[in-house]
Length: 242
Image (cartoon, rainbow, N blue to C red; front, side, top):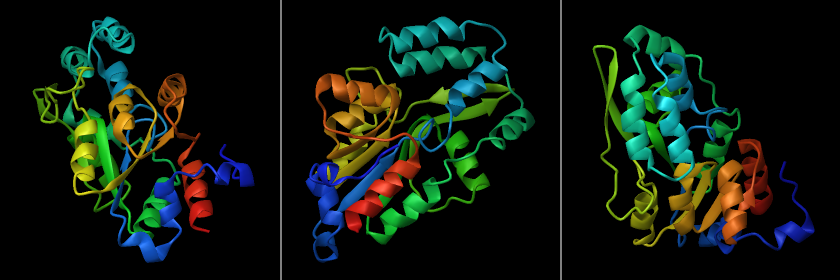
């Protein structure tokens, strides 16, 4: 859990310090990018789907190879989805059970009140992410994700955001969205947890990190704000603007 103290307040990144000064807000265009699986949701929705609906175990070595950095997520997902067989009804039923971090909506409202635009960037699929968001009545948040079609109970993927400049072979290299915003210029905040979040964390102005992303930031010396749940991020931002 993040606990704000006088000592940690002195380490607040300049971008976040600006959020506490409404007079400067208009001069600070700012976007917060949220990872989806295991950040907004309490578990990895896509991993859960693959585990539940796989008809064989061919997806397992692909998962291990991706986690070891041997293959990128594009090669991993393409291969793993060949093992999945799921009907539209079963998919809808599974997705209806997915919950959101209870502080996601309050955090989005807080950022919007500060003039900060929320965006979701995911290595999951837009069909899945958008269906979950609609189920929880989350609206008006841009979602950038991979695409998938359900054809005869098979998931057929497409990767419109695969990027040739990505050295990690990401199915969706989220870094490109942050770079495009920074050109304007726009300050960028990133909130994430896993392997697909390493690329965007490399270029974000402020990083909120947990899990593998937190370990990566600490190993590489990348400044970040640790968090356990989105309540921590909410509390941190509230303290900054206070």
